[in-house]
Length: 280
Image 1 (cartoon, one colour):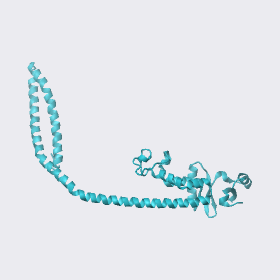
Image 2 (cartoon, one colour):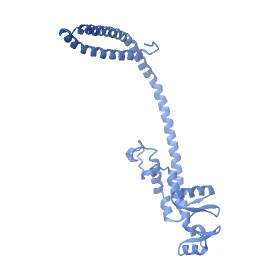
Image 3 (cartoon, one colour):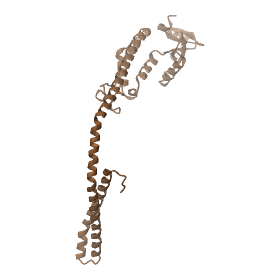
Image 4 (cartoon, rainbow, N blue to C red):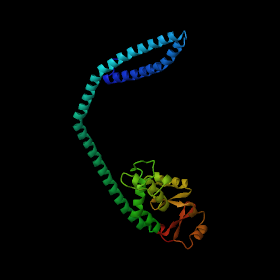
C-alpha cells in the first residue's frame, strides 16, 4: 500500500480489503459442510478438495489477522489526525465568522444601494410617465403609464430574479421578497425593459433617431404590425400601414370624422393624430 496516503486513507483502504476478504472467507466457509458430507460418503476427491479449501481459509485467516493488526496500529494516528483537524476547525472559526460577516455586510450594502437606485429610477420613470401621459392625451396611454400599471409590470419582471426556484410558478411563496408575477408563459420571462418596450411601441412610437425607429419597426413587424418610418418635426414616428395612402382623396376619406390630420410624406400621405400634427 502506498505510503503517500494519509493515515485515514490507508485505514479506509485496509478496511475495504478486510471486508472483501471476509466476504470471500464466509463464502468458502459456507461450501465446507457439503465437502465434509461428500468425504463421509466416500467421494475419493472430496478429501483433496476439502484440504485445499481449508488451506485457502487458513491463508485468508492469516491475511485478515495481519490486516486487522495493521488497521489497529493505524487507528491511533487516524484519531490523532481527526482531533487535530477538529481543533484546527475550531481555532479557525472566529476568523471565518468575521470574514463571513464582512462579506454579508458587503452584500447588504450592495443590495441596499441597488434597491435604492432601482427605487429612485422607478420614481423618476413614473414621473416621466405622468408628463408623457399629458403629452399623449389618451386614456389608453394614461392607464399604461399609471403607477399601478408600472408597478404590476415591474413586479412581474423581477419576480423571476427573486424566485427561490425559477422552475416553479412565480408565486409569493416561491419568492425571496414575496413578489408574485401577474403574467405566465413567455411573458413571465420578459425583462422590465421588454414589458415597457412592447407597450411603448404600440402606444407612442416616437424616436429621436432613425436607427431606433427602424429597430422598433422590426419588433412590430415580428408581431404582425407593419409600419413605415416618418420623419416629422425633429423626430421619427412609426405610422401603421393602414394610415398610409397613395393619394390625398383616399386619405381624406379615411380621416373623415376622426381626430386625424393628413400629412404629406414623400409621394403619398399619412394620417397622424391631431394632438401630434395639429388640425389641418
